[in-house]
Length: 65
Image 1 (tube, rainbow, N blue to C red):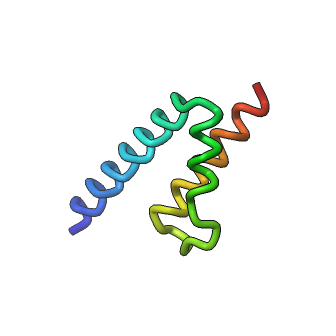
Image 2: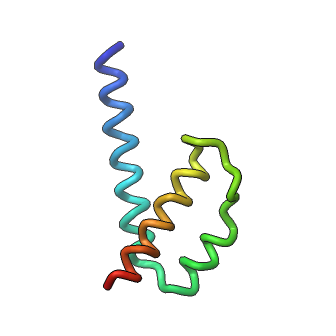
């Protein structure tokens, strides 16, 4: 059971990294459009909330550059 959990966490990590890579390749217009379409009141830990956090991080990263 513990091995399965470790494998699932590794797959989740890989999926989050793939999403981050995709977001980094989006232009400003599409990134902003994605931000507006994601729900603001998504449950904590949901896929929508994770996606929104990743979009916010990408937007902040771009502001610092």
